[in-house]
Length: 376
Image 1 (cartoon, rainbow, N blue to C red):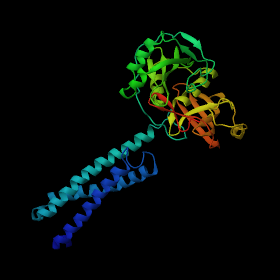
Image 2 (image 1 turned 135 degrees about the vertical axis):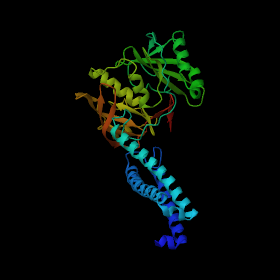
Image 3 (image 1 turned 90 degrees about the vertical axis):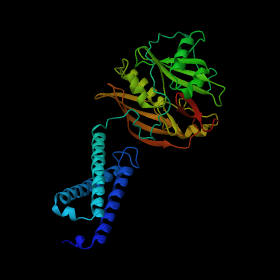
Image 4 (image 1 turned 180 degrees about the horizontal axis):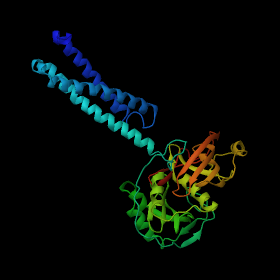
């Protein structure tokens, strides 16, 4: 007769402690390991949680084996009901622990094996995804510009990227506007219906592709409803999310065969991705920085020696670039790798050059590009 058989109360107390340990372990696994828990997969917390899950796995196996042996033993008939129930409950929890452990470890292995260069993989603050990612499956005919825009011409915000922008005549953009409204999420449909002007510029990396912006006024601060039009995909609202761009790339002809195409794509991608402090903007000179009206000559003198034009060169599998990047109230020096086959953009390195500058901060709230912070 074992000591536990001689002292049932002590044995029951031990079982209670064991069960508490098991339950606490399960709670820890759930909080630490599962996707969306306290730590993201791939982090140190996730790794430690996986190791702890393996310990629980071994502990759970012990209870299952013990239950099987007790039930198979003739002595099991002599067990007190309390003890049998405790062992049975511990075994049930053990089965759950094993399944949870397998799920967690499998998720970790899958996450590790599937790590690729994400489009929004900036080392600056992570991208916030908002709004709709719907894509219209209608062909869009080539729009006819009503006039060329040599400046902002009354628009409250500059274009998403510098380029040869044109404005459509109201009689010409009705069909486009109807499609924009139909592709808007319910949250932003009112803004789409309030568009009063549309300007656009060609996107050379898409066949018959344009970036377009609609002026939205009368709802607080004016905003710019931002979308692209590509033959074969129709109207696609931009929402500050890299995946929206990549979903489009998978649907239509896309090429980065020339330096001009790679240059245009990198500028477009930076402007279309929004993070905590707004969108990114590649600057080639002092004048291409988006200064607030309050900016002084002294402010510009602080950054004059740091701003350098974008440099793009061919690399294995795509393009390599170095650029001066405006983000928030700072400018950065950054290097990029661009995959020419799928448009993946990786910011390889970045470091701050000058902070605390009076720069205009723009962000994408869904497809609506608006100014945040001071307007002066």
